[in-house]
Length: 173
Image (cartoon, rainbow, N blue to C red; front, side, top):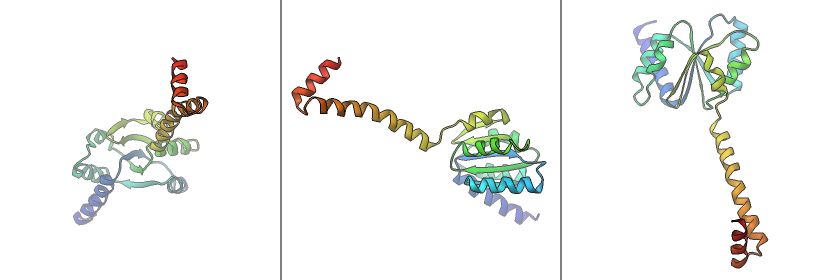
């Protein structure tokens, strides 16, 4: 690979890193062609971008990203490295768990999610259990709806009058 080609690859990776909030670094070494194809297909279905990268080029791209600190991930950049990029924080972890029911790989080296760093394959269960933004918003809405429903039902039971509202509120205390 020429120096110009390396520079171009670094710029491509840097562009990817500038845009992501979820980055997984995995080891896919040892997967045969069929397993790799199956993994790529599963990534595509799960809306996960998968790219095999050279460690030195990935590190240089990480160094060039200004607003994000990937330095804690540097020690995991050894051996075969595949990056998984997703919008959902837990999607790559769930994909790895599902895929590993068939084979021992991929192995999670590290993950970077919204500035939080997770190192090692033992973090896979924790990452898979992370809730997506949609799930958190749904839970918050559910929690907020319960008190609102109580107030509305209290207003309806009090005959929609101020006297009924005061009476209902005083009975609750």
